[in-house]
Image: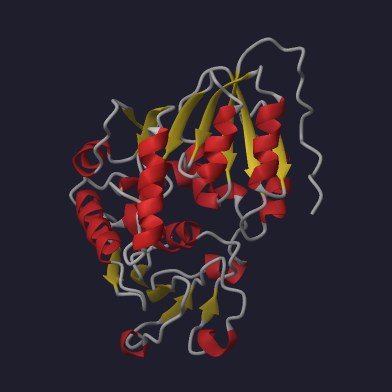
Length: 330
């Protein structure tokens, strides 16, 4: 796919510094727009999620506070734009400062300030090494030692700030050798999402009209499991497939509704709970459910995926407990 024309041509005659926001997923966009930044802000939107081009079209036709919006077919092109405008870009806001591609970008930007914002549970991991990869993990450790970086989000030696929703929990879980500023987002996740949900593909009118029902919502991960034992005693059963699932086949049989991949799961939950429905959400520790855990009309059933991910599940449940203890004020 060819690099698309940007919404506003970048005016290199302007002298003010620019903050560039790298976004490759819907969840990242939600969090990127929940950060307090002064001065010019440029959105570098990457075509890396379902219906990204239509989202870009909706975005440029809406009210927003971006100075410029650019749409790229891949992240390398976004990096190329940053390098081209390195004399203007003072700050980079990214979901990840980990890996050789990002490190190579920084070689061209000796004075840029790096900020990492929360994307999901991985932000709360103290190490990104995966089990049962001894040789690769050894090589990664050697590289980290030589480069001065740490193997975690926010661990790049050039990163000065990490922005998360649960600052105290993050400080307990993630330890840095070098002091990093830990900051929080402007608003709680669900409150902010509700303010910008008009930007996303809406539910169809029939779903919007469902009220006062007892509803099962299944949010699978990369694999759709049979949850027949959970599918009794509900007025409606809804499945919200993962955006990267292409061939659903007969996996959606037995459900009253299958939600398009381009509709965020968070939007579905907000719409249903706003219509006075009682909801039971079954998921494989889905990040989309995390910040809804203190909603009184939603209960959650977390089930193991086919792949055992002990550390992820453990941190997820601990973080979910933090959310549950918060006062409900939505």
